[in-house]
Image 1 (cartoon, helix red, strand yellow):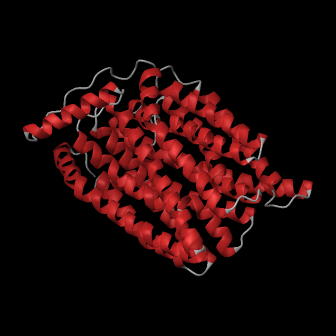
Image 2 (image 1 turned 90 degrees about the horizontal axis):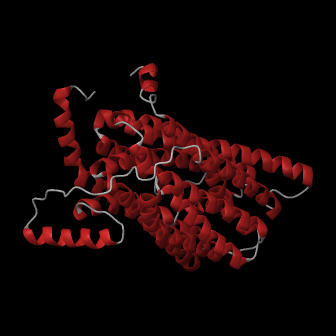
Image 3 (image 1 turned 120 degrees about the vertical axis):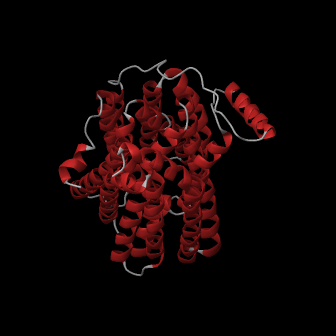
Length: 443
């Protein structure tokens, strides 16, 4: 495929989709700085490792608890306004982190931060689905994820530069609380800019369909009756599930992945710093390199989806990422670890936008927010479980052996989840490709 043809797939998005991408750029920059530096900030305050794990776990539980209410809110007030509300809550939380270093306030602001992020995140997939044509949907989802990673590259580099300038000008140490607070100020500014851009989106209240269309079923009568009861009970809560069995298959593999991710990924900064004794500037630089690799892989993923099908491409890249997890956890040299982290992040994250687009296309419009919310709820729940597991293993085994067990666990869970994607959806994808083949839509 020529470069011109490749880039052509990333054109033709509407005004609101483009504004959403710009808003995502700023919001994701703030998130990237938070993800890279917040645990290090807590460590600079003298917070011990187990308490940092507890703060992460409380935040993940709060995020999980907010997911389904965020879905209902998104359906009732519109995707745009829900994202604005979430963004404002994030800004308030970041201001709270600047206000005080007292642990009770840190816990409270961690809850508010994660609730706000969830309210902003849940409407994103339905919003992109409702503001894209089917033939451009994979590209929009991929581009949004690529923007997220591009902002991580920019934020990490800018964060490192600002920290270096601040240290030189003030005489503070790179790992001092004051240096990290400067980065929180940057996070707050980026969040406010993102919020302002969201306000430029067209008001979409009432745009979502107001009813669901019954899904035909070939299941036995008892199974249909159970599914009907589930739909009725969820409907009374403002949640919408057309086919409970399909719904479970769409969200469960992501839950397995999140358990593995939750007991390693939130603490990769501590792992890198603790194992190789790196400073703040080097740490931010490493994460910027990994984010750049991820951005490139995400942009290529839609082409793989056109060639191998969406599920086929998901299974290929996720399966290929697993050996690099082993290198990441057990390689003795920092250079190998950085390369492994970059490739693993690139491959694993490249599959996310494609599967999200696939999931949105499998359900009816009013079910999209519920599916997106459940995915993020289970992701947060998995991170909470993973965080508890991490803290317990660290306390029992110590730093080195604890991470050995954590990396072995994540390899097993990623392998199971990747297999389930193929077992459950491989046939669905092949059927879609065969149906499309006579029209010449496959390449």
